[in-house]
Image (cartoon, rainbow, N blue to C red):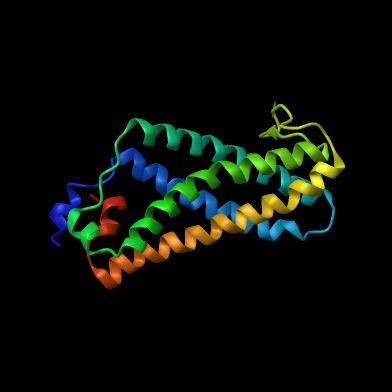
Length: 186
């Protein structure tokens, strides 16, 4: 496939920026979460948990903006030559992965917010802006929500790996130019 035909079917500039900004933020917060999860209780751990909450709320806001943008701005369709050459299961996986990622953009931070509310530790964005508790404090609910925050974060990480793997397959194996649709370079 010629690059020019893919280039005409690129995502718009803001969609590309939001994609990469959210991608970097998600990888960073996931790694940060892995690092801080097993730290012993200390003032440093509390500070890191607050930073994690701030990042999660920021990612939630970015996700909401990205979804609103996507709903109001058409995405370029897959080039016909790529859609025709892809097996049906790959087309299904392409669509299912995107839907699942968008769902998890909201599920992970919302479950995290509910968990921290249930523990009785409020989210105070940037140490200045107290956010309302998502749920009432409840030790039982906190214990129920904690593994779901972790599970959903791992599920999102797995889908990110699948998404990146598929993009790299299109770029290096299929050489169909699909990755150029989300490239920062024009």
